Length: 197
Ligand SMILES: [Fe+2]
Image 1 (cartoon, rainbow, N blue to C red):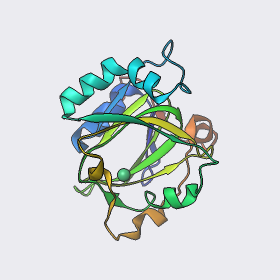
Image 2: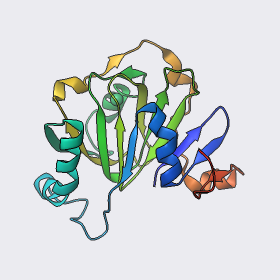
Image 3: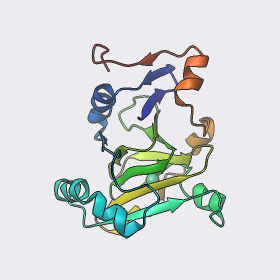
Image 4: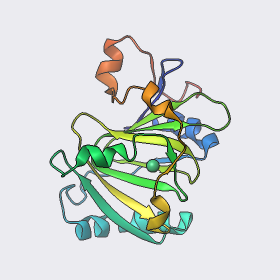
């Protein structure tokens, strides 16, 4: 389950309806795909894409995506930090950044153009997120430095980071928190449909 955190207000949103309604005005699509009973998250790329073909094909049709692949990042990937440094500074892409998380955790920071405060989305297994083309954002892995995800593309070249040159990312902690940390700090976690987003 994803968590949205708004650092300027210590607000945290942690349930699907409120996550969706918070993200919708920003053009960010969030969904949960069922992972229980599916092909193991360590299966081959071909097996993964076959297992999730119904969801992937529906998403391709809805978003105009052409191809899908599976990215696999582990702590022992050569030059991992160099790779992460490409994405942990503010950038945009010419096309949507669409990820379905199979394994591991990561954190997107979103910098809205409309003046709304920066917020983060921490994603994990079962989360689908679409950061739309042109949106200012940055990304980092969580402490386990592991992520396996299905990616969808219109054209892979469109995923090249276009840096804004703004050092804003350095002002935010590249940390994932998770529910236990948040509760230990007394941070209120919004859950349940009765809480307005
Ligand atoms: Fe990105």
